Amino acid sequence: MKDRQDAWTEENDLLLAETVLRHVREGSTQLNAFEEVGDELNRTSAACGFRWNAVVRHQYEKALQLAKKQRKQRMRALGQEQGKKKLLYTPPTPSIENVTEEVYEAIPVSSPTITTSNNDLSIDVVIRYLETFRGQTGNMQAIQHENSRLRKENDDLHRKIQELEKQVTQLEANATTIQEDYETLMQIMNRARKLVLFDEEDRSATSFKMDRNGNLEKLAE
Image (cartoon, rainbow, N blue to C red; front, top):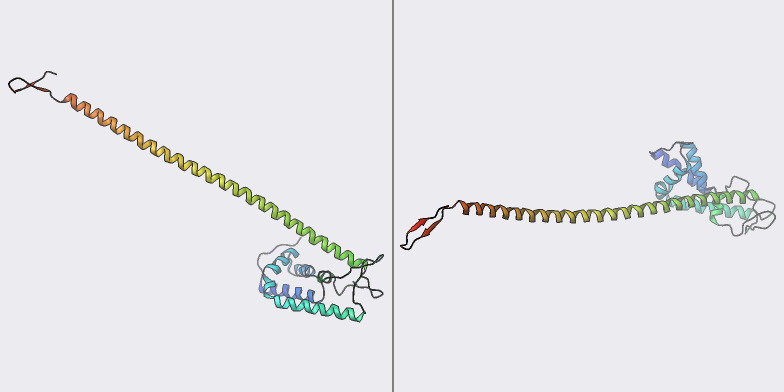
């Protein structure tokens, strides 16, 4: 197992760029380049591929286009030398009609991929290409599955946030009601206290009564 490393140096990025461009020019695949760099830097091919697509590729876009152009010229020259204009697929030897650029990327130039006796691709080339395609399909399915899982998790978190917001709103409303009830209760208690004080003052006050001559007469308690 290869150890993942977080820090990429300029030398690492330069090695990655040169290796990918060389593989593209020679008709190999970027996946093979990632594996070669991974062996060199003791990293996984997935880490090298992520670094290339996320950071390094943007710095070498023109060089990558030039490498692809050189690869086409190389394949065209090879086809002219062998007198081939099309690559067909006919039994019993499997071949592919109208081979696209992706097929060329999956076929290393250094390996015996094209037979010299006829216009067909060898069975080993087709098997190698199908295995590469299957691996890419598996990776895509894994990415789609992870994306679906993250979407579902995000939706669950969004629903929980909405529920918590409703609870907070309800608690705020309850707190407001409690505050209003408390203020009302305090007003009632203050009124009751004042009534008690007034009643005590009335009881303690001396009572007088005016007689017929206009004089005040103290009443007995």
